Length: 111
Length: 116
Image 1: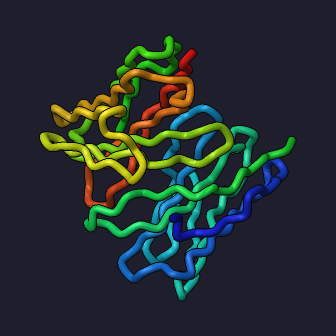
Image 2: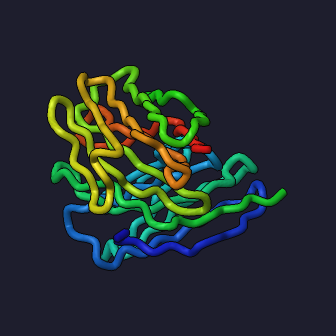
């Protein structure tokens, strides 16, 4: 079973920031938070991952709370092409753990 | 980033036939690949973990004799759906752990299998 919970769906206006929350209250100290997204009928795409510090790359920012029990993925200026299902996954590195996908959040970016 | 190529993207076959799906890591060596399946409006379900040079590890409930996985080289894993039936119709996606210590997973574009 997935170790994360996410809202099933969210809407965001084009050009505004999309903030996608994820709860992972049982996360272990060695588990990272990964975010992927899946556009319809395509394979998932890696977005970002982090352990405890906030992370930023060209696609998004990842904010992890100090207790690490939740995180938020931020798309700073959402476009219509960001409409997708977003998956939050927790997984330890170097322990051979699988990537377990939950239902994710279906983000709809509206014009 | 690392590129994973998956072929074919779509296949339609008759019931009882076998279908092979190929998954290649194009610019890196992948000792571990994963195979997922996805039904409409559902999330990805892990079918098996494929390790180069050894037998695949199947998830509970996945028939290893029906879904044959071969990972004969560091850049190629294949999934063969044997004696396909309509209930095997699904979206199959392969993935590979990319290079580097942070173990990012890179996905192929998926194969839509329709069994008539």
